[in-house]
Amino acid sequence: MRVIYICLLYAIGPFLWLSLWWRGQRLPAYRHRRFERFGHVRVAPVGVAVWVHAVSVGETMAALPLIRALVARHGHGRVFVTSGTPTGSERVQVALGDQVQHSYAPYDLPHVVQRFLDRLQPQQVVVMETELWPCLFRQLRRRGIPLVIANARLSPRSVRGYGRVRGFAASVLGDITLVAAQSDADADRFRQLGASRVATLGNLKFDVEPDATQVAAGRADRARWGDVPVWVAASTHEGEDAKVLAAHRHLRAQLPGAVLILVPRHPQRFQRVAERIAAQGWQLQTRSAGGPTAQVPEVLLGDSMGEMWHYLAMADVAFVAGSFAPIGGHNVLEPAVLGLPVLFGPHMHNFRPAADLLTAAGGGIEVADETALAARLVELLPDAGRRQQAGAAALAALQPSRGALAAHLRALCPPAPEPAHG
Image 1 (tube, one colour):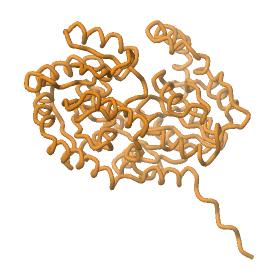
Image 2 (tube, one colour; image 1 turned 180 degrees about the vertical axis):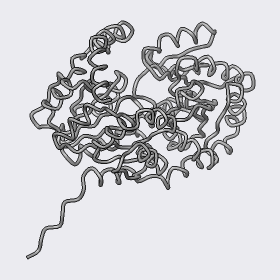
Image 3 (spheres, one colour; image 1 turned 180 degrees about the horizontal axis):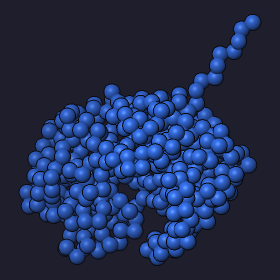
Image 4 (cartoon, one colour; image 1 turned 60 degrees about the vertical axis):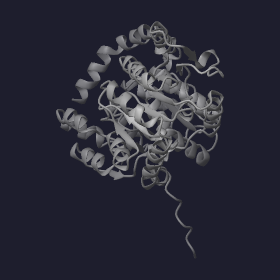
């Protein structure tokens, strides 16, 4: 299976290059720095203590507290962070700047991985959540470089998929130094596939800390609008915007002054979503054009990257998207940590434990469709007491699950042994 995997990768190798060029037609960032994906990276003279890979925005946000703690421990510039998407890359650069070195991750081709590792020579590697790269993992094992899968999760669906190649999966998992699972259920699933070095260290997303500067700015912008009901639809995907706008139309029939903050997940959709909103006749402001202004809009389009805390701080209620479409949901814990009631659709398989936790506490509400979403908003937005109660319940539900960051740091950076006493 490993030989077949490598042969298939080399067979599609030329198409990987063409794919970057083709995707760059819509999003030029896919063309920029494309050589990094083939292992051509520059490494600062300070060297690399830890390489952290976070494939996209969600994994990057979860990894930020861990990365900052590793920077504090190892020193400025000695943590190397890789991304798989332009949005993830942009989030790293905005949040961390020159605190870290950064590039796109290499493709899992043997010669590409060798080139990349020869240049980085990391002392340790951390891969976030679910990324399994057979060639990379085998190279790390051969070089004696410890590999940790941090915040690791594995859905039952993934277990069934990997189960079709169980021997190959067990071989890949056998190259990992430690699988740091989010939950006991995730740990059991990894063991089912053959992982032997597994520990439940908790979910790093529970240790998320708001960006205080963004929160303050968001609340100042909200104050300019006065006492109007505001809700945010965070991280929408294709097909969800129409449902969110339909829910907003139902809502405004009951609360004419209500404002929607609509934040698409991917920047390449910003212009298209703006055009759809305008075509439906909504009074629109955009963040990129200087909004929000003192004039209260019907819809504010969050067409900026890395400002989710700003948008959440402006809202009374949050709907977390990626859950009306079969995407698997997004991070429901960010609005919860700000004390907001959290709504989400039925497709939450990537965040089901967190969604169930908030629902059980009374701080999260699952809605089946746009009609149910509108009905819940009509209930919550006019009722400050009910909102505050639900938001406080959401925040309180997080507290017992915090501490994953400290557990991961202990696993990654075990304390030095006590000096021997003569």
